[in-house]
Image 1: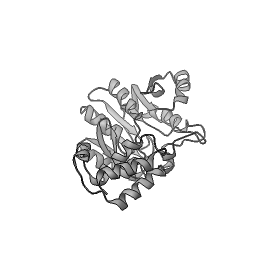
Image 2: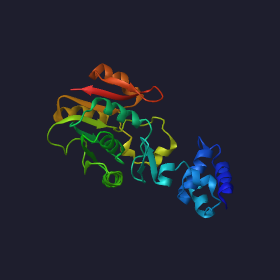
Image 3: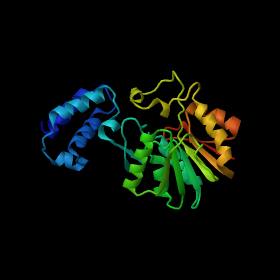
Image 4: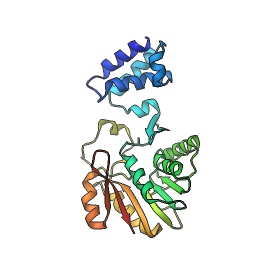
Length: 261
């Protein structure tokens, strides 16, 4: 079928299943044809019908759009993403913005749980003077982060590791978007396709955050900073118990905690 027919068909199928069926229909068709949005409306190309049906059916089951396209946009850059690796969310851009506001050239920074590498890579590209290290317990994620770093020309030292255990020496900051969802907490259907260990932190959503608070003391220099993405439910606890400064995301929900040691 032609592009316009494909767009109408995909939009009709996605109606009522996703939040923005028109936009997602465009994204799916563009991904299949590997063309820009401008080219989408300028061409009359044939869209592979069987492949379109497969991808639209996947999306109707709430299979993540980013896994279908193999790409996720973060801080105005495109990063590779694939099944088995957690998909970065727009809220995590707040973690980067807060980090950029307090880090300075020459700082040694370690990111825990890098996933696709978006945080570490973005920090390295936005502030080339930083010395960035990052790890993840998931070898698939680390391999993908290395690929993203190479594609985008970012200098980041990446390794497979559990929290802060692999790191020796002292750092000016620890940055992390740790798992913070508690069992039974309502989440989007897409999360069921993503690795549970990347977002679930039983029993209360704080287990990994508590571990970071403990291990950060070992690696941070005096006055060093722990900067974490958090659940809005945890803001009050971290402010009262650890003196955290809490920053809101784009929706004005408590989203990032900054703790100075």
